Image 1 (tube, one colour):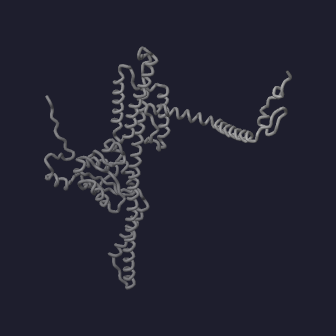
Image 2 (cartoon, helix red, strand yellow):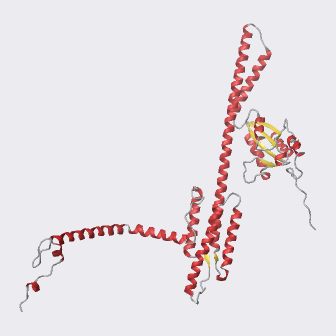
Image 3 (cartoon, helix red, strand yellow):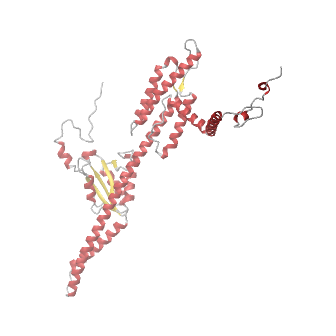
Length: 418
């Protein structure tokens, strides 16, 4: 039987399917099918473009996934990216980042927990390892939560308490897993302790900077006050001198003279010269030695300096509301280089400073007589120095104090047992 037309027809090619016309030996494509083909082609091109865009960003996506995976591992053991106290401390940030990297490395390498790899569960080593892995995460979560709380609550002076608290937490966690021979590793524990100490160092540095800034502001206020006093004193001296010169000029015109006015004019010239010298030489001033028996006890003195024209004004300010009693003045010595003299006295008594943590404080364990001897050795004869302590207000107050109150500088006798 001869082949039919359908048997001898050439199969349509891909080009023939997408063609809008007829192909040799084929059939014409209906218009509705043509629309459907174009729509499918547009969808394929859009999907292709999206895939190309994802492929171009593939490296960045992989990197982000790696970072997210690392964070997930750390978060699973209780290490989160919270606002660390040292985060904005430029001088400590590099050391903090280094610590964070070493801590993360120990966690990811499994060295944060010391454990036995031979523990079995249901006679299965694989199940035992899975259990120890799960328990390791729980142990680290508890331990790291305690470490983070210790850092957040850290204050000046309680670093030892924070370290003991973390050590106690580590011991308690190890006790609960003693049967499985699991504990926080020494290396990981040491890094968290180092983080606490680093934070404590920063808090100390921050407090020192705060104290230094406070004292600098006080120094500038004192300098402005001194400058104002010197300017006002110069204006007063100039005014008085002008009056005397006018009076002397009038007397000379009438052929008279006044020796007292002439002497006063010479005194004013000396006072003006001294005032100008004080204004120009910022190192000149009074070194003072004062004590406050009622506030600090016996044999505690404050050694400082003031550039005030009236040095007692400065002592009065120091005797303000911040102390319960007035200071007693043992010496007020004027020096053209009071800054150096004060520094030498501070250095001599440095090992007897009351505040060993802040060298800018000027209180020392020394008697007035000891300071007098050192001051005499450095400047020669002293015109005025008193070793006696009046402590008038303190002595008057003692009789009104309750019997249980212990006066400063007096210790209760210790009783011996046996």
